[in-house]
Amino acid sequence: MLNLLEKTATALIRKFSPMVICVTGSVGKTSTKEAIACTLSTSFRIRKTSRNYNNDFGVPISVIGGFESEEGFLSLCTILAYGLWQLYFGARFPEILIIEVGAGKVGEIERIAKWLKPNIVLVTNLPHIPSHLGVFGSKEMLIKEKKFLISAMDKDGVLIIDKDEANIEHFYGDFPGKIIFCNGDKFIKDGNYEITYRHKDNFTLPIGFNIEVRLDNPNKRSITFAGFLGIQNMKAIDMAILVAKHLNCTADKIQLGLQKYRPQSGRLRIIPEQNTSIIVLDDTFNASPYAVENSVNTLISLKKSDDQRRIAVLGDMLNLGKETENIHRETAIEVIPKVDILITVGNVSKVWQEFNADIHHLNKHFKNSLNAAHYIENIQKEGDLILFKGGHLTRLEKAVAFLTKCPSDYLVRQETYYNTHELDLNPISADHE
Image (cartoon, rainbow, N blue to C red):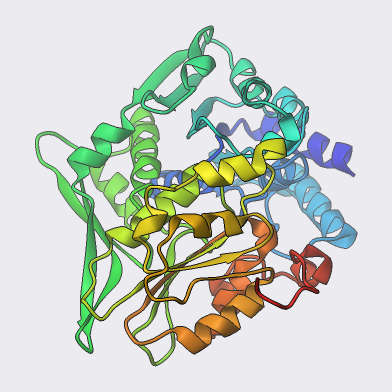
């Protein structure tokens, strides 16, 4: 089936010749893909990777399109049929494909690159301790895998890369095409990122943020986003603007597209609890050292009254290999002490408890996310600001669902496939430690 999907996707690209934009990196791929898609959607017919289907099956499916159903063999057959229909009867295939490409196993990107052959590649971030070390064994092997996308481009290809990120020099040394360097740190500084708030019941509650971007000289334009937080969105927005300018989009069209940007579920989305003044920051999609530090930094940066508390619910980071415990001990240790209450979930995250003073005597560690949720329900109070951040197997989205009673489409991993207990981390263990 994989071969058939790849051949169908390849045939579609050959017939319709869309521009192929690929986004890779360890952190920020999906947000960058979403920002680019929004920004270009006002100027081009686009198709983007659905959700985060960025693996060997997900990439050809994203090229073919039409994938919003449950996973399974029948669904794959339906997608294949849709691809063949487009090949023989379709007339308005997208002008631009925006494809997220992840590295879940050795050889995966190499295989994808051979048939996808991108025109533009963006490398978002590869920190000193990247994700998937447990799979690739070393940072060098992970870099080698991601470079296959760049090697698949010729001298007409374009590489967009943030020169401020760690390990970036490994990607562009022998690239024969055009390189566009973005300066993410400068963009953040010049963008005047500012969290916006509302006031309710004497509490200060975040609602989004405002930035200023220079789309046409000499003036900056102010853009307001609602429903999510995180200064890391600035780098996604910066890369999206660079792509749009490279493709000669007008400043008005870029702004119109950017205003539609909203990261996918589980990425620092703001979810208010029903009928309360409690704010939940849902960052449950996944976790890496870089992302955990960003998330906790966002939590402690929030304004609050004296009666409000910042609560961090942190789950295990996964796929970090034999150094997992040491990496946990080295992650976010400068910001975790500033959290008012620390709840940890999983097998390894308990080590973070050593770095918090537990001033309210409410810190606890749990093996199961729902048990943590029941505990939080008992200790939370009006005005609390609660962050949930953890690796996907800690299933912290279940805790968010329990506490907020929000619609399922607000959350990650709500498909039937994810309801199996085998995907929970230690589902049998009920007691906190």
